[in-house]
Length: 362
Image 1: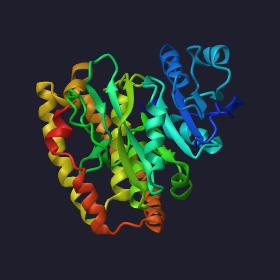
Image 2 (image 1 turned 135 degrees about the horizontal axis):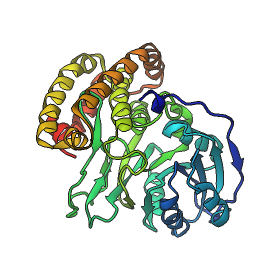
Image 3 (image 1 turned 180 degrees about the vertical axis):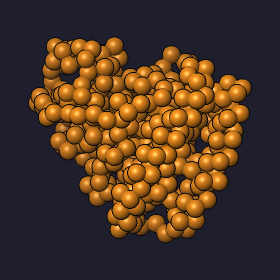
Image 4 (image 1 turned 120 degrees about the vertical axis):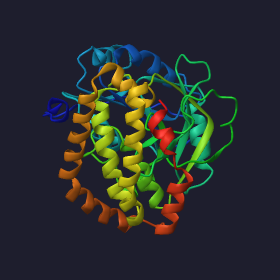
């Protein structure tokens, strides 16, 4: 497990590409993070080339791929900007590299295992341009290959910091066709206003992976920025192709980072109550592991219950080691927070998940 967490990197290499220009439209910087995703890249990048909205640049961050991804990009997509890291620096660092060199008014993130509908960027930008206080726009994300089955339409949050896609695995009957407020977008396919990121800062690089979109989304919301769901901004996603839907790596980071989310963003009363909700969740997840339901049940089919327990305790230890740093970050976040404690509680309650949903649904 430790080999998955610790890594050493040398300097990155950057290759300059070109911009697609459309006069009169705001520039969007599309950032695509890749790690051994060559088999998905062509479909993903071609879907961007075919966008109706054309005023964008594409920045690809390659996190040390060994599958020929960079060779494919250089050969067939030489107009795109490319940063090559010689190892996997994780979601947060990789995307931050792209944001730092981005020229756009807006930052769009797209997973390498996702394909964007031709109107995706147009619909995101149209919604963001309606109101300068909109800091984030949520896409409607379908599971690729599953007819009208949703991945998510934004995210919901559980009282111990875990989050889950809103509408995940639901058949789309039009129940999410209304433009409305959302808590925060999935990092799989999201639009962020650069002005918001300049104010609140970038992704927390201590997270490495998983929970990064929760972190930056909550930080934006606490700073007073709006988040809106744009149902016509459609993406098709091959879920968790990089690390696996129920891998030990994912289990570790999800559990550790949800603790840091609570420490950084939850009002004191909710922070103190969160262990109770964790106990309730773990009790239901233990049941799920026995009967094969939820993430714990799926994990148990591939790995041992003992491994799951070991990962849980390693995550707790790692979270505890990072506690002093997270408490310092909590103080810094308070400096940009515009919502009152009551407003934060209302927001978290409005987009809250039940224990059954977080523990027993896939």
